[in-house]
Length: 395
Ligand SMILES: *Cc1c(COP(=O)(O)O)cnc(C)c1O
Image (cartoon, rainbow, N blue to C red; front, side, top):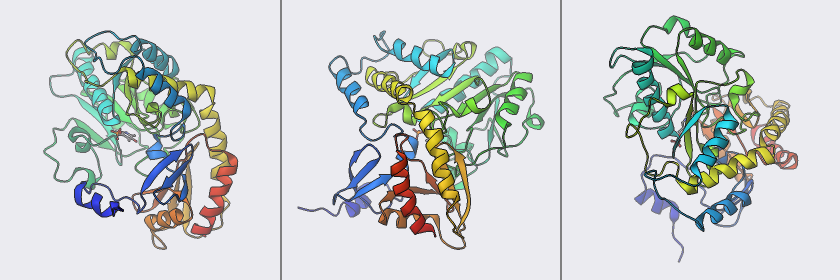
């Protein structure tokens, strides 16, 4: 019996996405197959969650091995793997301590809670007055608190009331004029992903860091999408600074198969969390730990950051050399590339549909940007294969 699965999904599943009309049923490395066995090159990597490729063999092996031992004991007890994972992640990032969560939005919520509590208990901000500086066109997830400080109407309309405590300022701007005694933190994406791979001016993160240091404010970086090698360094902040005060990770940390996120921080910040003040039933479970450990091992052993840097430049140069009058800009770092389309000529959505017909899966962000973010294991030959087809579609 054949089902019309698209109609069935439209009948029974919430319509909070508008998927491209393709039913995926298989994945392996950089490739995906639809239910008619057509093959596609993944140029989106599940919003950068699948950096080490689909069903990565090492991730699978780590999962199966962990399933021989223990599943979810909860954090009511000590674990034989959480500390090992935590040390590894702290050493990788240069941070002192980590707090394990599951989804990105949860880790951002954790960061917000930490920043406020730190603001009251360590900085002496008056009760309920703490402010976090955020940026226009930010994307940090979908909880009510987080959409409350979005500047995108679609994300927030009719989900209020929102409780305040955020100051939204232009991305790339000087934060100094917005600082007062109530500001406890700055929350920022080093490259804005969902906004359309928006890169800030060179040196900007370093400049924000200086303002934060001068004013006893926490610099909190959301590297959920830019982290784990995506931009050509292990973490995008490494282009400009030694380390932030707080770091938020997710997506690729879960090896493409499991939700794993983390909030990392300076010791004095993390220590505002005492027993019972925060938690997560699934956060830091042994399955998640085993997978995250292996995704870090793969990042290092397979030099994914170096590959991302090299192949990102390779792809970017190829895209820049396409003579097309519908491309307005090609931007990004590493294999995190946005192509801005002239919307008077064609919509980004149409381009994505045409790319799909050629065997390449991407996704538009907003109306004008197509994101090219393949798994970091992609080879130059596969990039060549893609560019040949991209050229056909956007010329
Ligand atoms: C995806 C993303 C999030 C939210 O992560 P979820 O796992 O979807 O909750 C937060 N911040 C950034 C920068 C992201 O790209």
